[in-house]
Structures are given as C-alpha cells and as structure tokens.
Image (cartoon, rainbow, N blue to C red; front, side, top):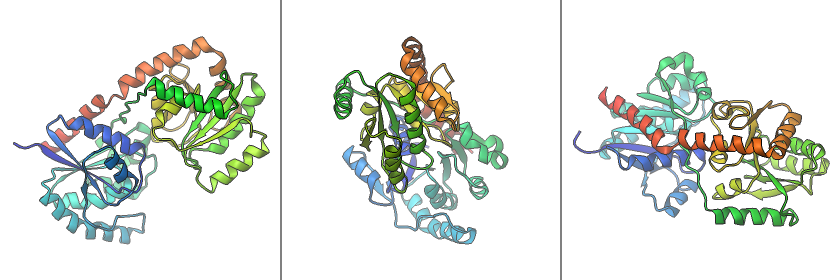
Length: 376
C-alpha cells in the first residue's frame, strides 16, 4: 500500500471521559506512523466541543440510528440497516480500518466494516459485557481490551484471540497550577495550611461509591488527630447526590467535606491532594489511579477489578477490602502518618506508572495489531 493506511475512530460525541483521552493519546502517536488516524463524530456534544477547543481535526459522520441496548431482533435490524449507509461512507473515504471504542460504536460500525470489506478493531474498555456481545465480537478482526479483568467475560468465546493492551496515560502538570489548586482547597477548608487533603475523584454513581467514601471519612476522623479535609470531585449525579448530602449531615462531617464539583483539567487537583482514595468497584482499569501515581500522589484503592493490575499492594499503593470502611480509614491514616514508607511507595509508583503506561508503548502494541490484520 503506497499511501498511509487510514484508520477511522468513530465516536458518538455526546460524552467525554477517560476512554476518549486514551484514544486521543493513541491518535497523537499514530500521526508519525504509517497510519493516518481520522476522528469521526456522530453527534454535537461534549466531545466535539473539546476537539474544537483543542483545535483537533474531525469529520462529521453520516446520519444513522446508533445501535442501543435492545432485544436481539431489533438490535440486529438496526445493525444491518446502518451498515448500508456506513459502508458507502467507508468506501468513499478510503478507510482501511475501523477502530471502535465503546459499545454503541462497536455495534453501529461492526457490520458496516464487514460489508465494506474493511478491517475492524473492537477495543473493549469496560468491565461490563454479555454473551451476545461476545458473539458479535467474533466478527471483528481484532479484539483488544484494557485489562485481564475486562477480558474475562469474553474468554470462553474468544479465547486466545483476546489481546490485552493497557490504556496509555501521560500525566503532568505545572507546579503553578498545583499551587493554585492547593491554595483554593486550603482556603475553602478554613485556611489551615497544615491540612491534609484526602480526595475522591469520580462522578457520583453507585459504581464509584461516594457513600462508602463518606463512611470511610467518618471513621478516619475518629481514628487520627491529623488534620484532614475530604475533597469530593466529580459530577454530583442524582439520585446519589441527595443521599451524599444527607449522609454528610447525619455523620456530622459538614466541617470536613469539600464539594469541589467537576474540574477540567483535573490533574492539578489530584496533584494538590495528599492521598487519592478510590472506592469504586468493577473498574475496567482505573485511569485516575494511574494519573495519581504519575503525579506522585499515594493511592488507597479497593482490591477489586482492574485496580489489582495497577497496584502492587504495599509496594506501589494500598489495596483494601472493598467492604470495609474501617480498613480503608486505617490505610489512609497509615499513609498520612508513615511519611518515609509512603514516600518510598510513591517513588516506586511514579517510576512504574510513567514507564508502563507511556503512550509510545501503547501505540507500539496497537500498530502491531494493525499490521497483523492488514496482512490477513
């Protein structure tokens, strides 16, 4: 092939999260390769606005009905109907590979790629799955997942065809932004510059478990004399948000909790923390943990899901029983009080996370997959 092979990355466009960041890091690495990445967007929304703000080129994808969760007959009908319009688009744009990164895009573009005789990469980024999706995934030319934990639901159907390639993370921030973030947190907590900041960084959902974070905070306040404030970042989504506010009052934590809302970029706020606490369960990997490690912030996380593939317990962070707020509180207290041990752990974590999750390493694995499927 004399020209660069063209890789289409289709996105819905109505959301923006960690998977988008990871994909954009990959796309940036591909620009100097033998592949030409093309970003396509179906809907106007958060992602399109982000691309425009960052001056990243993208193209409008054809109007089509995005495939959603549905009964089998309706889902298959949508997939086949979409395929005719999208197949023509792929041929007109001379696309060689379609690389999808979320469930709606997998189902919307899978058959279109097959009917257009283009290669398809199914990049699975969540812990959720179903037997039906595993059967669909068999039609892809490559199945990539971000962790061994995410691969498990597909192992019976796909076996050795599964390729685990952990997400890229490239996290750095200026000291000025960190200082500004720290100054704001200190001011909002009453002006005590000796305060220790324990942060929760996630949208408020059942999976992320902000209520468990509050139970941990309540126990930590009664466990240590170290001055602590708990900074809660993320979108306060209902119905969890109302329960969070109620629990803060019930536990008498009003003086200890800071509701910080969503912050973009989040990196200065993570770096301004003394400990990052990750109470979530069933995480495919845990991007926020890796960001904290690269920024030199100690991590206390649930011993669950993809967290166990990121952290080596007591070596690069602390993994704790997901059902024990008491153990969480003790782990945070130990992290704050054992400064020499914590600093050694942070140093190891930063070195390992920076090397292991480098975008260039991730891109090498993906490029090898592209080369392999194009040879078939």
